[in-house]
Length: 272
Image 1 (cartoon, rainbow, N blue to C red):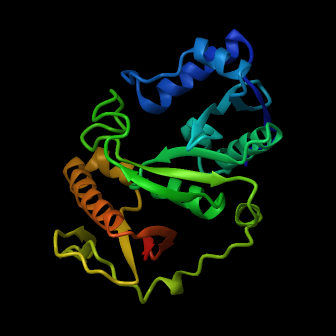
Image 2 (cartoon, rainbow, N blue to C red):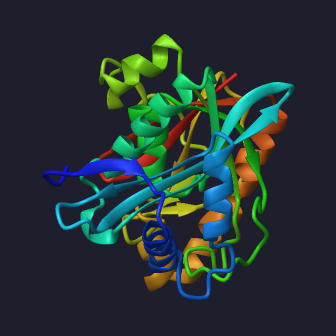
């Protein structure tokens, strides 16, 4: 993680303006779903989290935003946005912002935080499932409509996994402390149900019959964001493939239980 980072709430008009600008840098200038300063202010007054990571010069490097809500009659937090500047990604800032959020929410007496992420974004799958100990609740098609104006969503929609983070549970504290080990060898005997190797030696999505097994693997690309830029038709093929697969197994009662990166490939394990 970058040195001398300060984590604090966003309280001033300057803080809010920096947050709006970071949203546009992250999701694109045409992104229609930017969280405005008025909502940041209101959310903070009623128990929401709007916080950022700042460098020594006071520059906003990342932020997190969540609000209070109800799920099945239980008070929870809904984590709507998390963003980190591109030049400092991969250095742990996203995880530190989630941990800041966790401590804040625990002090409110709330024990569950929900959010969504794109199942095709492997780095987020690793952070959410392996580093934070969150669980997958369900797959949702076009959670935020098919086009938000963001280049990150263009052509592949906004399919999402709904995530539940039970922040007071032991499994979460163990994941945060890196006491939960993911052994790639535990995955090697599980059948991959949605890809085959292409002539170029790269996995290719296939549309075959889906087997019902006690446990199995669903493959996703290691870097969907680069694929969207360099080969958008392949990105669309991956979305169509994994949407069909995840929805079908969800209907059969399977749960996403693990995620693993191994040998340049990425897999979810599904169990019934």
